[in-house]
Amino acid sequence: MITLDAITLSVLQAALQQVCDEMDLTFSRAAFSPVIAEANDRSDGIYSAVDGSLIAQGSQGLPVFVGVMQYSTRTVIEMIADGRCLPPEPGDIYIVNDPYLGGTHLMDVRFVMPVYRREKIFCWLSNTGHWPDIGGSVPGGFSASATAVEQEGLRLPPVKLFKKGVLDPEIYAIICSNIRVADQRIGDIRAQAAALLIGQDRLNGILDRYGDETVVEAIAELRRRAAEQMRANISAIPDGIYRSKAFVDSDGVVNEPLTIALAVEKRGDTLSFDFAGSSKPCAGPMNSVLATTLSSVYLAMRHIFPDVPISAGAFEPLHVKRPEGTFLDARYPRPVSGCAAEVSQRIAEAVFAAMVQALPDRVTAAPAGSSGNFALGGNDPARGRDYVMYQISGGGYGGNAGHDGLTNGCSTIGISKSPPVEIMEQAFPVLYRHYALREGSGGAGKHRGGFGLAYEVEILRGDARASFVMDHGRFGPQGALGGKDGAVNTVTVFRNGEAHVPPHLSKEQDIPLQAGDRVRVGTPGGGGYGDPLQRDADLVLRDIAMGYYTSEEAAEKFGVALSADGLAVDDAATKGKRAAGHH
View 1: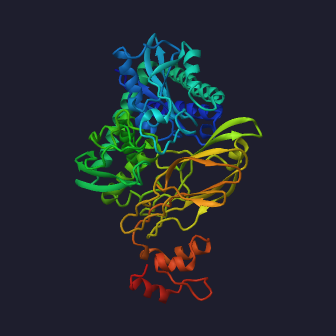
View 2 (view 1 turned 135 degrees about the vertical axis):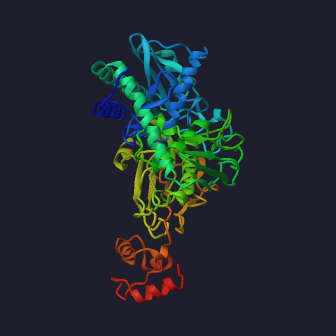
View 3 (view 1 turned 135 degrees about the horizontal axis):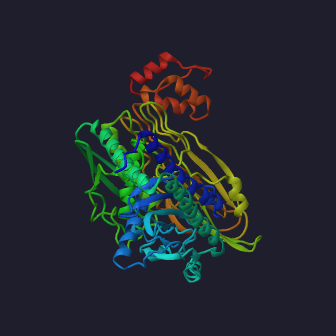
């Protein structure tokens, strides 16, 4: 047995992390699609040869893929073992996007590749990239009213897209025959494969330098320490059961909210998550597959305890009871296009709402919790070609014990950013007429929520179809400990000068548009933390000076009155308003 000193262990931990970071960077820099190249909607990781458990993941990869790629890699290993999948050879890369085999929605396409040492598999490398289209009934894949997964696009079980390092032309032809703007996918496919090959090269360099046995021992020790650190954090939480609820606007088909009911039991050094009482499987695409549900819990706890190194060990003290019979355990053929980008964030919100009761100094009020999925597909007559545009957008984060929430932060589940407006206008026939903070959208509180984003896009030429799968249009992000909810998501489509608001508020598909039509979106603000009447009046004055609130809004939300010239706080009037409990 090899004994590792602390310095070597630390160096190897950083080295494995660097391998994943370099894969992420390669993927983004080589990809064609703005959603990957600019928005970084992708992730890379290293997984166990035995059971697919997570060894390391890129720091700039989407957190929601933490549990998902672990699950899907394990599934590939199991399918190879029982003969449902061809056995691997050096240079093989499997492709899979089947949600029920450890996935998310169909647009998140996973590549899985074995890394060999001495003719045996040492580990697996895997990555996920969001393809801007995967076929299905609407451009972009976000079908807001699908009732079966087949309507959402091409579903691939694990098959070898690369065989001994060579792209299989037949599999590639099948893929291209089933998706829109197929000629652009080769760039993303090559980028995704290149990231894995870079990872293999860098990992072999580490193994050659330190020796396979030393690295294996380090991986085992890092997993053990991650579990130990997570258990230590959990041990500090008071024993008990913490309950919460979160709500999805609708499933896109039935215009009624879906409920996520959560009970978190803390006992000793473990946490158990029980979603019993959540809504039943739904008709529309807001079902969540098990892998996404598990990953949503994991990433929520990563938000709460970010100091725990990321590996499978960090998840060992977290026990999630399988939510059978609910929309959080989708089975074939339930549609799932909204699971990764939207339902996952409601699950995380439920975790936050439960855990803020136990850890008020560490957990925030609810963040915006929507990826703002807006897909636009059409034909650009000036360029003589079809296009699929996918817009994601940020929102406000919740306030916390120490300060206000982050404004225009990325989604809870990722690090993805909105592609730059200039890039989108170059790539697609659109003009952003407005792109700014959504002032006043944060929930009031002692520490207010951060603000969302407001933007408006105009179609410049050609015909197009728009689809939306968003959330928080009916209920704003939850405030905590007396804080108010953040502003709801809003969508308005202007066609021929007339305003149209989707009946489901945040979801609709296949809205026909033509040149001159516009889409206006306001993303949610974060929830407020603590009683708004306890907010420092000088902070309210600063917010007014910045244009975030009017003096009337400040008086209404925070009970703060200003002097006649509006340049200072009227202390006496403010004290009177607050004593009267005026909001």
